[in-house]
Image (tube, rainbow, N blue to C red; front, top):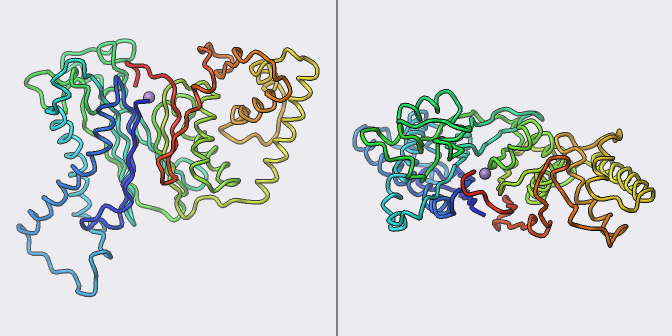
Length: 398
Ligand code: MN
């Protein structure tokens, strides 16, 4: 497990009403992802505080009305201040990437880790996404995708141009045939071209920034690493989470269900997700709960029917058979995959002696057989907004 995440609900320093959320997908070790999760926000805040005293020295601002206490102020409501904060975010990514390189850990040539970063800064009026790499942030509004961040893959025109300018190449969709992301923190083996600034190296730590005005119809925001997006589209994730929030208001549970569904769809990467619900998020509805109960009853009946006819049935053969049947009201985006746990639980009861080696959760794809106990290692971050699933990691594939 090389992922890390960070959450800060109150940034202080004139940003009391602003929050920060981030998911880091580490690769080739967990040093960089952990380090960045612990230090990125402080680095940005330091730049913010320093540039504030500079701007106060340089300009004669009218003092704030006396009635306003510090905690009422969100400086980012002011567009010049918002621009300053955006600049600080971008500089913060580059600054920490430069300073981390001096860490004693990197005196060892063995230390080659790196991490992607997808971050969201939420103010009373704006959502600022800063993305570096191929993790993704998605904003849901009115049951659909309002915004999704752009993935930095080596094959992308702009990325490829920078890589080739720095003397590298893109092979098998990877930087120099090896690294699957074109922007990341760490990965210093790809940042050694002399005469080029950090933003022009084979791999750059420069984030893309996007600012959205918050809308009353914004429902929820998801930050997740590519293990999720490899098997589900933005639209599928939004539809699926929407449908889960109608039957369950426990966000941690919803995150777990999303990750279980991704595992069932064949994801074999480690995964982390943060789900943030806004006031317009769907509310639990009795009708949706009843519909889900009816759906579960239909699936259970079909599974019992299949097992009665074939006591050698395996999880895979049952899933394959279920996929050929018309089953109404399967959760959009999740499909039959999101019922894998329930079906497996039934099989444990109906066929307690079945061979578990046949549990191939990839369903029709050729995937290694992995014991479920290994796949399902959930951890929560203690504030009820995160969940992680862990499996083996692939050193070269973030
Ligand atoms: Mn990954």
